[in-house]
Image 1: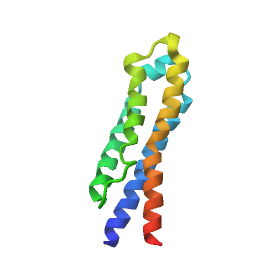
Image 2: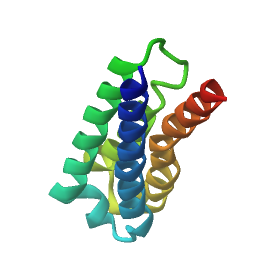
Image 3: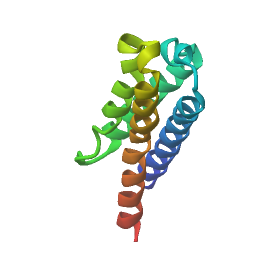
Image 4: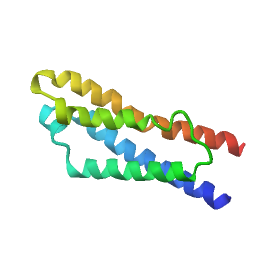
Length: 119
């Protein structure tokens, strides 16, 4: 059981790092072209985040209501690619800035839950 907790904590740390890297990219984006053409390394971070999130969900004994929050962040990441225009750059910049915060919310809530169980 202790190995499961260590693996869950490692996966939680990895999702936090991948989510933080994605957030850092989008918070530094100023040009519309950078929102529309997302670099491959950011997409790889997103894929790694999704895979670690699936792993965490597989190891978890119960499903939480916040487990699906990261879908909001994925939608915020994809919206400018399909619907972004230079005229609406500011709107999509706000969407990506605030939407990508949802990458770390499930991880922080799971960390709080795991910490509460260990006390």
